[in-house]
Amino acid sequence: MDNHSDHNNSPSGVGGIFVTGGAGLVGSALLKQLLQEKQGPVKALYRTSMPLLLSEEEKQQIEWIKGDVLDVNLLSDIMQDCKQVYHSAAVVSYHSSRREQMYKINIEGTANMVNMALENNIDKFIHVSSVAAVGRLRQGELINEKTEWTEETNNSHYGKTKYLSEMEVWRGIGEGLNAAIVNPSVILGESNWENGSVAIFKKMYDQFPWYSEGGTGFVDAKDVAAVMIRLMNSDISAERFLLSAEHLSFRELFTKIADGFGVRAPQRLAKPWMGDLVWRLEALKAMVSNKEPLLTRETASTAQVKTFYDASKVKQMLPGFSFTPIDETVKRTCNWLKEFYRL
Image (cartoon, rainbow, N blue to C red; front, top):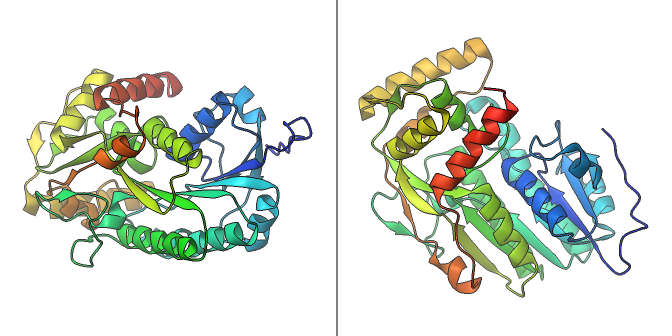
């Protein structure tokens, strides 16, 4: 679909909005809210497919541009008549086959976005980072915005790319970019369940039998999008915000999802030594099915850790904002997936 809509009918003086990663979990939730709030003409960059979350009518209201964040000339062209930039494009992978692409897109791509935003005098830039950029292996320690990433607390190449891409945004801020950063925990919401965190829902629907001792923070994609829009329309700059609604053990989350689908919840505890075995089996299965494994050597170690996030700063700085309870997020996502995949 190549719908380059005519923007002459947009209100005069309204600068355009540019969203990268439009087909992703956060990007599609963001686009939906921008349209609902009539925030101005929107351009969205996508790489291969359109977001599943948007209706045909909603898709028609967006100017779609096929390409990626490595194309500097394209980015510069798009930003020439834009005032606001939301950068949510990233490769999330724990699989070695996509590592090289992930380093390029996440770090170099973000550097390009920052440079072009500076060059085109963008009013404001909102960057989607991750709690992975803070370093996740911190057993029992309460993590907040001041927590610094270290090599020892990082257990994934993804975490390293998110840390380095966030550094590009801080560099931009040092060079005069008006920007703010969000660091969501594990994001849940409606999207393609073949990849990313939504793959957990597919695993549960398929009655994956295992759960691990660990736990982490979870947040609704809608909440991440809502915070991004509020930050964009505020005078908050040079700040990062951890976004996490609540801490759940993996068993608690898996049980909620299984209940949402009306299937049996995982009953078998995977001990740490079993994690090694299970991820190897997953890797074999992935080779046969040509899909990315949900569990890898990197995610197996995270699965045993309990990580806690302090997300009080966003509530202090955005009065009236509150997180959606994860129960609600899971129910809504299960219902959407049931309808979308005709389960």
